[in-house]
Amino acid sequence: MRKNSILKLIAMALLFCGFAIFGGNAVMAADVNLVMGTASVSGTWYPVGGALCASMSKADGISVNVQTSGGGVENLRTVSSGDRDIGMAMYSLGVYAMKGIEAFKGSRLDNIRGIAVFMPITAQFAVREGGGINSVADLKGKRIGIGAPGSGEEVCVREILDANGLSYAEVDEKLISFSEQVTAFKDRQLDSMFIITTAPTSGYLDVSSQARITILPIAGREQENVLAKYPHYYKDIVRASAYDFLSKDVDTVGIGTLLFTNAEMDADVVYRITKAMFNDADHLKGVHEALKGLSAEFSVANMGSITLHPGAERYYREIGLIK
Image 1 (cartoon, rainbow, N blue to C red):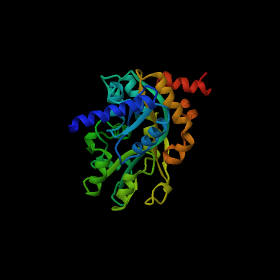
Image 2 (image 1 turned 135 degrees about the vertical axis):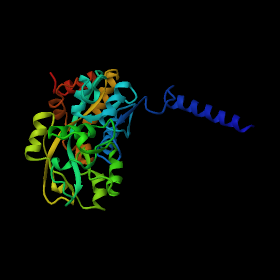
Image 3 (image 1 turned 45 degrees about the horizontal axis):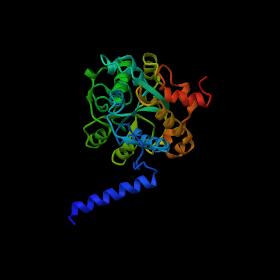
């Protein structure tokens, strides 16, 4: 018998077995396959997203897979267009997207819907210790990695600089991803790196093995300037315990993380992944430091002006957080 005929017979036999075993349904994979956009592998969002995906995939018939991306702005655009199913972004970017302002000027994404608010993230400029950069003002004229085009990092850097009287015209901004920043900093092509994420981040741990670095404070008047002009930020601290290269806590600013989908996503699917994620909260808190504060209560309290997806709202109502 010819080889291709044998292969066809094997395929038919497997198909028959599938119907027999699964009661007429030969599809053994998940019925629903979703993709979550996060950020680069060097930051915190990618591993955190992977953990969330694993918990969401505990919902029967649903598989959620993590995917790298350029960050929050890209995630919002691709989720809005349907190219991705779920995404992560700084909370402020979700608001900007729904209003069609800032990075989304002229392209309002009014179909973005919230699933959860979680993982407060921390603004972290890394600089060489003793390199003469001791404040935001000292970034003037310096080579700064500000994140990939379309990333939340880029928006955050611009806001921090703007609040303190600096513009891109006064710095040498490098629109490169965080993983690219790590390489460029080690090669002395950057004076400062930037990421907004939960400390510690593996990229800074990597760099600190080859260079003496520290975290640039956003403190005092410079911190007050950011909070006054951009109230979606709050006072935050990078703890000395987060990095071996820090000898004391460092003042900075932080913001919440939005987990979102689009309005067209099936409500039952969103309900099931939201429930699976929060049902697995105790496990997730032990998986990654950034998830220690994960709770449905925090999520509902901090959703603010973001419109909830009906599936997520159903879950929050079910557990009594929304009346």
